Image (spheres, rainbow, N blue to C red):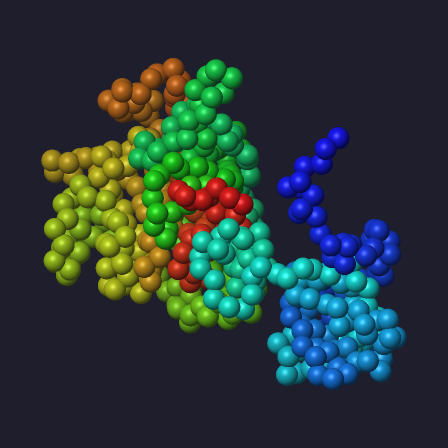
Length: 459
């Protein structure tokens, strides 16, 4: 069989191939975050070379293992000639196992260093594409699978993990049950955003934009419920705040009105910020986040305004010409940040620009809904959106008919109002927008491991 020359030319030189057959050739190891318990002892750690420099018969290796960084000192006098030669071969991102004595070093960020006694090379990396020089965003996103290894990107992902854990822990403490809602959904939850249509064995369906309708169903069975997973919006937007695929938590609170919903949202966001301040100090410092501002959000009440009052404030103070039917976009959110140094709840929105399931009421000549958006300060924009839910069967029928929705598509959803309906409220929080707010990162593309944007599907 003739070889494919493209694949053949991509093969690595032998010097860059793995030097071990399996993990059994390595010593038992610990992680860097366990080092503090091992002062004076010999330990082994598996990981990667971040950088290295040599000074005669001493080499200093900056080493990471995913849970932390540490300096490893290799001295020729403490190693065999073979090991010392291997030290000289090391390159950035080479994978190795180092063994050595743990010592205190108050000058280092970790507070410790390791004096090497043994080295086992797993693989010597070829020249790493991402260097210390300045790279453009397209190059970095093309190499996102490698860019994740940088200090900043690792810090963001560690904060992401903390936020995810904080939300789920808080909800469990508050008596919520997690359910997993479908990715393929036959109906629209919100008619204010574009959907991805999918051919489902000859039947038209959509990628989910929210699990809310299904959470409402589970709520009747289980009480307080939530889901947490990827959602999709086919919006042709290139702003710093938008992704095509992102993660969202939707929660439903039975027997809760709009005020109770806002109280709950405020309590949850304060918990998330508090957990990040407590458990991600090093990461927030590396990201140069203003932690005093974050602490202020925890220790003070959030602002609460109606949509009508917000429009009047912006028109008066910033000479805007907004009407009572207008949405609150990025410029308006930026101006709100100048007025308030706290998160702002905006309630009682025009029915025309909100979803069908929100209860409506008359405000003069216009219809409003009992809905709320939470806008973050510092120009970070909307983090949460929620509302009371219509729970009267006939009222829901009237709205769906008015919007020309098909009865057959929502028959199952209407059953929730037919058999044991209750007053309830719910909200969603975007994970990536919350990460952006807490880390202070300017572009949302850095808040998710592999961003999907209008012009980016690879890697």
